[in-house]
Image (cartoon, rainbow, N blue to C red):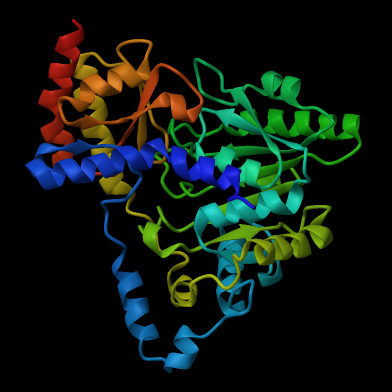
Length: 393
C-alpha cells in the first residue's frame, strides 16, 4: 500500500501564487509590511460591505440549532431563490431555486461541474493565460487539460485555435471573464463566435460540448458589459463565488447554475448534486447562505479598485512598462522586461516587489500584478518599479 501519488505531487509542488504570498508574509514580519510590495494574492483589501456585517448580526439572533445546523445538501431554498430572483432581474431569465446548487466557493463550483460533465479520458479546453488551479481540478475529474492560447494581441478568445484543439474526446471548454490573470472581458461578438463554433463542433462529434463559465469577477468590471453567457450558448453552466464581489474569500460561498434553458438540464441537475456528494461539497456554510438572502444584490466596491487601477497603470506607464489595460477583475498583466518571467521576478523580489510570473498561468514572458492591495502600497511601490526598470536600462 502507498499514498496517492497524484495527491502527493499536487501537495509537493504547491501553488506558485501561494508560495509567493507566503514569502511575502514572512518578509513583512521581518522588515515591516510597509516595506514589502506584495501583489501576489487575489485577496481583496476592500472590506466587506456593512450589509454583510448587519446580516451576520441578525443571523446571530436565531436559535443556535437553526443558525448552525445542516441545510439541504444543495443549499437553503430561500438562499437559492434569492439568487435566482437576482439573476432573473439582471439578465431577463426565468431561473428557479431548483436550477442552483450552493457551494463552498468557486473552487468547489468548478470541481463539481467538472465532475458532473467529464468522464475519465475526456478533455477540457482552457484559454491561456488561465488560473493554474484549473489544471488540478480538471485532472482530478479524470480529464486532460488542453491549453489554447488567447489572441496574442487582444487576449480575446482565439476561436479558430479552440476549434483546432477540440476532438471527439472534448467534454467542455472553460472560460473566465473578467479574466484572471489578464483582466480582459470577452466581448459579445467574441462569445457569439465561440458559441457558433461549439454548436458546429457538437454536431460534428455527435455530443454536446459544454461551456463552463467561471465568473467570480463578474461584478468587478470597468465601463464595459460582461455578457451573460447562457443567453448565447444553450449548453452553458455557470460557476460563481462571492469572494470578490462581497470581499468574502475566506468564507467560501458560491454557486453552480444549471440554466433551465440548457437542453441537458434534467440530467445535469442530479449530476451536479451527485458530484457535490461524491466530492463532499454538500451543505455550504450555513451562516453565509443566510447572508446571501440579505446581500445578493449588494454592489461591489468598484470605486476602490478603479482608483488602484488608475494609480498602477499611470505609474507604470510613466516609467515605460507595457501591459494590457484591464477591463475587469483586479489584476494587471504586465510584460516582463526579459523573456524569462521567473528571472524577472527574482530581480523584482530583491526590491521587495512580488508580482506572479506568468509561466504558471500557461504563458511565458509576463507577470500578474494584483492591485487589490491598499492604495498606499501601489503609490509607495513606484520607486521600486522605477529601480527595477533602471536595472534593465
